[in-house]
Image (cartoon, rainbow, N blue to C red):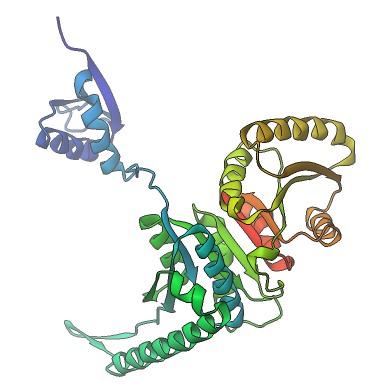
Length: 366
């Protein structure tokens, strides 16, 4: 009985030949179809064929060639990542991160990125001449950052207290690069349990990078991000009693709420699942929210949670009113990836809220 032959890809001839050599190097028999050698040309689409039994071994090689290597999902490591820029709002965020780390029995990692300078080179024959003063400038900058880090840690130790300071294992990382990209790259290799970041107010000027960096991390990070706005009251976790999760009945909400309840469990807080929607659709929204509440209460019997619907058309304003009226301590929601066009013309609600609200914001990525 002949073995079944399958086509695993339809590629240009040059890529098909590369794939064939890669497959044969791994001991997988391979043949090409639609190669027109008689006329001295090749078909635009060349079939790469293998035996069906070799498919499991062949597809990872194909993915590698096409640049779509699947990364296995990594489990979160038991630490909290604190990107810092030595500002007052960064200090407030680090203080709250220490409290969370104490309650969750986690370590903390401070992460500071020195913005990458532009390198200017002068071509001269076959040699590239580099500015000799640049090295000294970078060395002075590194020494300055280390001094600022020491000052920052001394202030933080006074703020959190000696007992808490000594109870939490900590590490610090300083590197040169691009803040948003480097923070995200680090979290891909070492996924933290939580990222805690401060953010400056919109009127503070343009001297820092934390504002835009925080917004970028919120949008792209695959782990929960807790954002502490500059104008947020300096809460200790014992005072955090009310948390709101803003829902639009997305299927990802259940995953986010499970993670949220896991983080809140040690803190004896009340969770409200809040939906703000049009008055005309209120009955249908109530039905969906009621069903959501039943599922959540079934899965989390001991959790203090409730579901509330508020009619309204302006999500930002209505959320802010609800937060102020009900003394909400933390707002949580899920952000979604969108294509570039949608991001330009319909910015993420989370990105707007992080600059608009004075309440700490806990964001989960869908």
